[in-house]
Length: 75
Image (cartoon, rainbow, N blue to C red):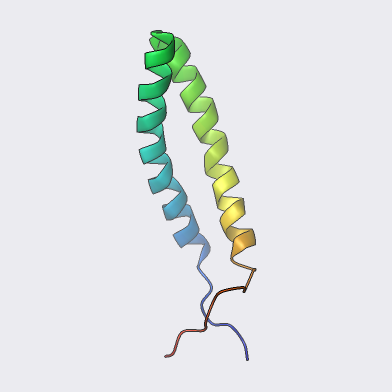
């Protein structure tokens, strides 16, 4: 039986971006509290979160190919 519950690429992108927004807010707060330097904080957070968006996207695409624990949806 073929699995019919694959996510579209656009859904993975939206999930990645929404998660990163929350993560950016947390990262900004924590890095600023540690460094007290806004320029350093922004540099670290921008670099880290830009990389994380791509890592999360590819992680989701790979995970979408793993069928353990998934059930097909009934139409």
